[in-house]
Every structure is written in structure tokens, then in C-alpha cells.
Amino acid sequence: MTTMLQTLRQELPQLGLELPDDRLETLCAFGEAVVKQNEVMNLTAITEPAAVAKLHLLDSLTVLTAENLKGKQIIDVGCGAGFPGVPVAIGCPEAHVTLLDSLGKRVKWLEEILPTFGIKARCITARAEEAAAEYREKYDFATSRAVARLNILLELTAPFVRVGGAVLAMKGSAAREELEEAKNAIRRLGLKTEKVLDFTVDGATHSVIVLRKIAPTPVQYPRRYAKIKQSPL
Image 1: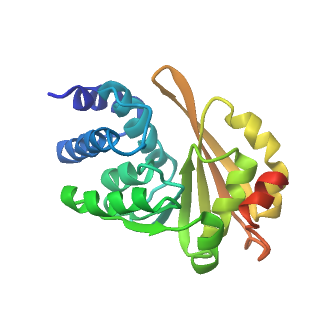
Image 2 (image 1 turned 60 degrees about the vertical axis):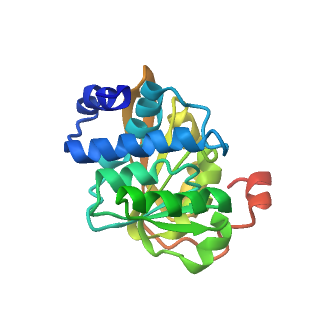
Image 3 (image 1 turned 90 degrees about the horizontal axis):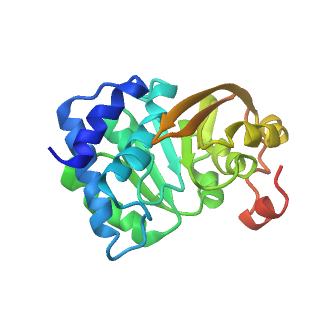
């Protein structure tokens, strides 16, 4: 048994999740593919098998504990090497996952590699604030990891979510601090904080913040990224 697979089997029950062996093996195959591709493309600083299993695969799967994603449309904004979107697609193949990233070569690699593992996901190369015009309020859920602080991230993700859906924001130990900082953004973007789920991943606290969409996001959002960063809501 590989280190990655062994780590997944040991740690998954702590998340309250159970996945069949074939999905665990697909998760590991994708994790190994990321490490291999990282030799020629900058995808991740985490390459040790047990660390990949914990900090990429298991961390991504925490999204599955936040909401029932079966049959739902979910967009991973700023997916990078495919986290959390690809593990979500593997863990819940009934979900309809879209991977969005601005870096074309990363998206092209994902488009090429995912079918080889039987992973279904739509891949889009675009900046989030530009793609929002075409895909506005088309998704049940938007998720994102390691993209920006919450008050910036919400302006990039909320426009994709339909009323009644939710933003599932993945955060580390500063989750509640960022949530406090983002109060104005939450109100102005049509969101409401529903719950914060905490997990221990490799000895550190990781959280999924669930922000329900209770009203349409005003049409002036998202602004251009330079403006968002310069003057967060």
C-alpha cells in the first residue's frame, strides 16, 4: 500500500467521511500526478506523499462535509493544481464540478490529465472577475482555497452563486478573524454566514466557512481585481 493511500485510510474517518477504495486510489493517482508534473511546472511546494495526502487531498475533501453536493453545480475559483475541485469531483462524482483558473498552462494540464483517471470536470481559463459576467449566478456552490483573504475572496466567488446556494470558503487558523474582517463584504454581496466547520489537518486547524446566498449580488460586483485588492469591501 502506498504512503498516500495509507494516510488517506487512516485520516479520512476523522473527517467523518467514508469513500470506496476505487475513489481513494483515484485520489492518490491524482496526487501522484500533481507531484510528477510539479517537476516541470510550478504546482505545489508540498511533494512528500503523506503531506500531499493530508494537506491537499484530505483538506480538499472537507468541502464534502459542508453540504450535500450530489447533483449540484460547483465552481472552484482559482483552482491552481486542482484543489479542492478535483478531490471534490472524485469524492462526489455526482457533483458537476467546474475548475476555473487564470493560468492557461495549468488548466490545459488539468484538461489533459483528468480524463486519464476518469475524472469529470469542466475546465475554464479566465480571471474570476471576468468570468463572472458569463457565469453569473449559475452555480449552487462556489469554493476556493488559498486565493485571498475572505473580504477579497467573497467578491470573486459570490457573483457565481445563485440565491439559495452558498460560498464554501476554505480557511486556516485565521478563519474567524477573516470572517469578522469580511462583515461588510458579506452584507453587500448578498451573503449570510451560516456556519463554520473546523477540522484538524496534520495538527493544524482548517475551516470551511459556509456563507449562504440570500439575495442577488449587486451588478457592480465583482470590480476589477486591482480595485478589489486596493479597496476591499
